Length: 282
Image 1 (cartoon, rainbow, N blue to C red):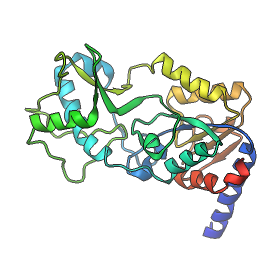
Image 2 (cartoon, rainbow, N blue to C red):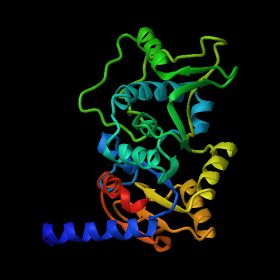
Image 3 (tube, rainbow, N blue to C red):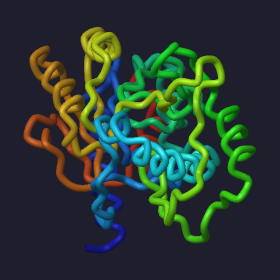
């Protein structure tokens, strides 16, 4: 297929999506594919390595597991925190500012939608920006905690060619001798404000996501294969309301058959194209 044909097909698919979304208030659901152009890898995209993230049970039951987690999480945070919002994040912020997007529900924990300027963001799986104490409830800024970790572990350095995980961690070569951070208020166990594998999304947070979809007139899914149940449940809410659903993702998703329009391509490119066609969406 020639580049000219591909460009024509891309433009036609974007035009179909704009036609479907025109004049509607749009809820947006994003997954890891939105952040790949910011240097954060996808869980399930083409070429993504098989990963076995730590479960909540492992983290809570084993001091050694927590030590391994905190080494990898700290190393990953240094790379993760340096990531910048890409054109897709900025396009969604522009669509919200123009009154097209009603807000963003994201499965990502990178905080890039907030940094790009989106005002209403429901972070389904939490955020790495905060760390909380499981005993007294004190909340800490991750940047402040990172300074404490480095002060207690001055030997820790970021390895070359580090392989960052989509949840902001790195598999460490060794955790031996690492001093695990504890709550500076009560000495309790600290945990990043993210939903670990094996945990449930807080009920209030999912209700907020449902409300965003409920008060919208269309749903755009960007960069998610919808393998995680939280995403497919929101698509089902939209289907029950008979809302048009536009899916933008490289590869198949669990909801392709329910989509009014499916665009197989770069989320950055497509979302920027939506922003460029803003007059047609209003």
